[in-house]
Structure formats: C-alpha cells, structure tokens
Amino acid sequence: MAAVKRVTLTIVGGALVLVGAALLVLPGPGLLLVLAGLLILAGEFPTLEKYVDPVRDRAMKAAEDSVSTPLRIAWSVLAGLSLIAAGIVWGTVDALPLSGWSTGSSLILSGIVLFVLLGWSYRKVQAKRKSPR
Image (cartoon, rainbow, N blue to C red):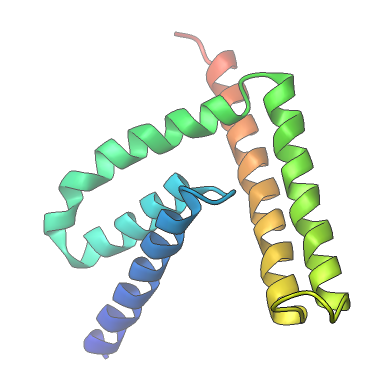
C-alpha cells in the first residue's frame, strides 16, 4: 500500500511540476503549481527540499505582484473571463482545431483556477497589509 501511495504522489507531484512549468510561458499560475508539485515531491524525495524555499519565495512574490494594483487585478479578471469564454467557444464550435469539450473544459478549468488563485492572492496580500509589523 505504501508503494501505491508513493507512486501516486510521484505522478501527481510530477504532473503539477510539468503543468506549472508549461504555465510559466502560458497564461496561468505556473510558479504556484510548480511549488505545489515540489511540496508533494519533497515529501517523498527529501533531496528536493532545497528547491522548495526559493520557489516558494518567487511564487509568493508573483502572487503579491498579481494583485498589487487595480489594473493588474482587472487584467487578471479579464484573462480568466477570456479563458472561460474560449472554453465555451471551443466546446461548442466544431470548426476550431482541437474542438470539443475536452479542450473546452480544460480552458474553463484554467479560468476557474485563475480566479481561485487570484482570490487567494488578494486575501493574502490584504491580510499582510493589515497585520501589525
């Protein structure tokens, strides 16, 4: 049973790191997914722990930067709405390349993840501003 858990965690952590790496150049929360994958993998492979803190620092800085101004928040919301709209279009228009609900649902899910992470980042930054130093 422990072997199944280890393999499952390795696959999930590896997938998160790979998707996060892809999202570093595509629209999406790449660093946060890389961090999540590293945290999972570091639990199984302690040698990876040395990479967690630097990635965590950069991911938290990127999260703070994403909600640092109203304009950045507006652009992030627009990007999320665009992803959801593109997902609906890709799911319903057969003439598009790779059309269908498998592509459409992944775009919609990306938009939802963006909104969740945007909300999380905003709450984290607001809490940091309110906390006494």
